[in-house]
Image (tube, rainbow, N blue to C red; front, top):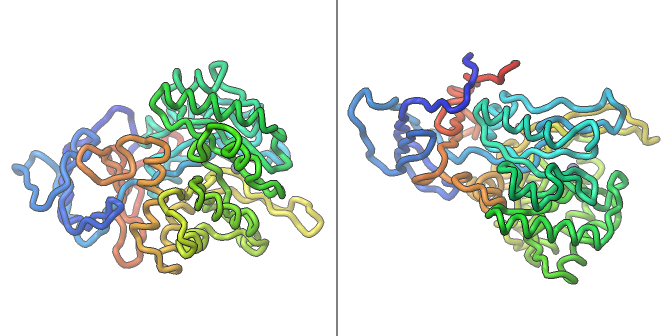
Length: 398
Ligand code: ZN
């Protein structure tokens, strides 16, 4: 194993005979990687011997590195006391899941978890080889920003791309009012416009009966468009999922959470893969949908009396597992399912150079076995993190 270091770019790499999905199928072609970017995607590329590493991709599918747009990289949870605070993301977790870009966020706890610590963790993961961004704030509204306001955070802190995750329709939320959320969305929108970033509000929607009511009212009664909000956990129960279908059909965005446990599914959670299938069957625009893992977030299990009986932790590996499930079990085309973790989040979150296999894009690539769709290789910013199914890089303290 080798440890990663920042600012290091490997030799040029020529990947021959790759079956490319960018995420649309592009057929058999070659990919030249230099300086952490994709220099050229074209068949029949060759360079003088010794100038670059040449690797035959054989029959492997080569797809964009995955974008996980909601990860508690610093850890989260704590709803069962201090001992239930969950641990942070390790580099190897991301590698095993083919995740090369993560958007980190805080959650319920904005006291013992802080934005400077989140920013530092994002920078650490970037030094270890990933590409990272963060949302500013946590569940609470008014939002507690890093530099005084969300608008200033967006303009002054490079890694901040939006606000969140702010909570609505949840017993753990601050019960934000219409005016509070309107002000927050407006400031986030203006900060996004001025900084050239997405400036979206990532909204945690809880199990509360009000569901998306507050978001619908904001879109109806203010000038803020539906696309300013990226509501997440939209598959958490059948009622919210039905609301999500109508919301997306009328132009809204929706994020489905892929981390789950069997007990949640028994209670009515719509598994992310099935949620995608049902959205497609309902004629809803798939371009407005994303998957995220809620990785390192807590998945509390309660008994019939509501007592906490166990705690699982969300995994970033669930992200691609759900894409695979959609393809293998629900007959969704690979390119359609892949878009939810590549080109869709890249476009919605304005992550330039991400989510595509194209000339000039960042060299974030995942190699898949064409039969089983198992992840066999991961390249992030031009560097191999996994080869032959095994991670070859690990985090600083792993
Ligand atoms: Zn959440």
